[in-house]
Figure (cartoon, one colour):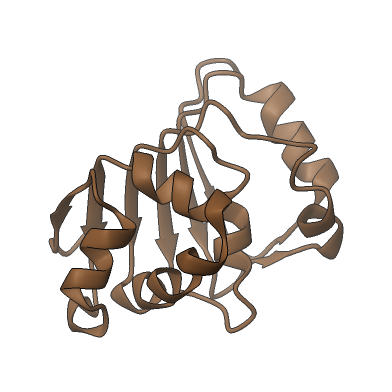
Length: 142
């Protein structure tokens, strides 16, 4: 399993135990793709977000978003993310959330490649630049 570099999560509740399994089993994992249309984040993960970090994840792709902001909480588990591929609607929400949360803001500041693959017009360009100041931004469909 050490050869696995990418994982796609869909139709699953992301639990603390599952994240520990991923971290211990896929030691070279550097890309995670999550379908937030069909995934949910267990409450225990949100409460324990300082206890587990997916340090090897450098590329994070989000499909969809949830109304309860789980996808923002998940960012805190990926402290070394450098490339973020995401919907413009999610970026709009993240832009509004970062002034309230320095941890999320710090993660956004270190992202060097931001691909907004859909609904680009949903996010304000100035706010996005402020939230992701070091990111080269693109709006390519994937």
